[in-house]
Length: 638
Image 1 (cartoon, rainbow, N blue to C red):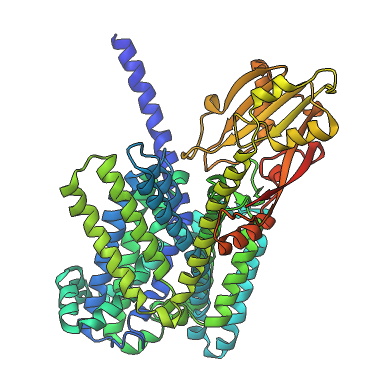
Image 2 (cartoon, rainbow, N blue to C red; image 1 turned 120 degrees about the vertical axis):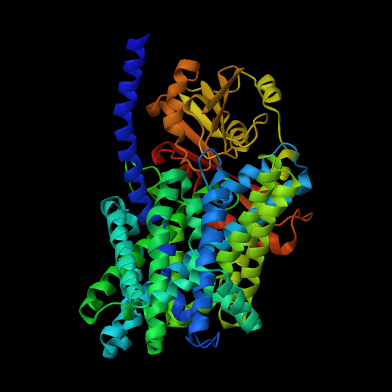
């Protein structure tokens, strides 16, 4: 017994250094992906808090008040809400608004109406997220390149062209993936946070009285003194917490522990130090308000700092671009958007994908924003509404989880999540003040995306209802087949179908027009349960229907990329012969037309028809070999 105990202890001792090394690696990687957005907020937050829009001047009591608000926003919203509470709501390790929506909506005790409500607000959160994906690259890169104006004012006319060059280059390299440069993201971002910390501490030492802002009573005094102006200033303070949603959305890539360690050990101290350093500089030199971040640095350091800031903002933008790709994949698999063409950019990292349609639409949107707003200060007016809207949706959904799954009870749920909802709603309201100054841009975009996603969902339901009207049960079809009239060539035919009990239209067309039924027939249904990953042993469900006909259900999580040929091969051991060289895939290509009895309102019908035309080919989406696919068309009235 003692020998076994010593052996177990020695194995545990050997495992601990390996675990610590792995956690340290994940923590460093998380710095480059998770914290890029919130980590570049010091570039513009303090400047916007004292902008012409708020009308505040950098007098001591207001500097202390703003710093106190920023401090407690970082502590309450990011640390308490996201790090301690929200990150508990994981969908089998995955986070993010769609993963959370799927987690909540699959609760068995929910009625249809309440499930629909949570589905709607989840889609709204995803739509707002896309608005943030456009604004983050625009404001981050512009604010970094604007540092050139401090180093050399004569370079001001070059700021917008240089920012556009960086942005176009960033989107242009997405096709080749980030596997090569991704390993540098963590170290570069670590250097960025070290520089933030050093610049801030150097200035704090010269004016230590700035640390008084750690007390929340300065935030209370600020509100008591300014009233409505303080409420307006909250819209600028929100800029300090943009990117908090990334802590939750990227949890599946790195795990909760490395993200928490990076935030508490590196990011939060560096951010607070830099904000307090900027505050101390404003107390000593109010003219530094022109660009307090770059004015923290000595003149010899300006050009290297601009280069480092640009690299940090590119990394932050990369995180939002990758997030948009991942969101597009999840939405397509969950049936909330048309299928999109997805390319893998890494042979080993499954999460590294490239979605051409999303990439070029994002680039067009970001370029349009830069050309329209021309400066980070102008863009700051548009920034915040989408972010705080997503935060509010997250709080509502996590509140449901706390009540239903965690069994907190009404009192604790209202005390904790109710407080977060009140804070989020206040921030949304404060940012809505900027609606006419550009805040309408992300809202208009979110509304358009929400309408498209909701229309696609309702349209798919309408198509399913119409197809079921004329459906033929597979059992009845098999019984009606006359062996003397039907030719059965060798090989396997795989027919994709959404309905497990009925014969797919493309099979009926093949029988009707060609009188062909292959020797082996696989009726394939692809299902996406509301979970991120499906274990390999639960991937395939096989039912043998007789006469060489088999029904196969392949299940994929909403974070996975379907690969039908790969997952059909192992089924030979279960009586489903699929030889890659003797298998044909039959895919129905439906064309939708307006019906006399429409199942959708006219505007939704027209929008659905447009979305259906731009949907990616089913063969590409499911990984079918192009030279083995046969498409059979049909017309469906909706």
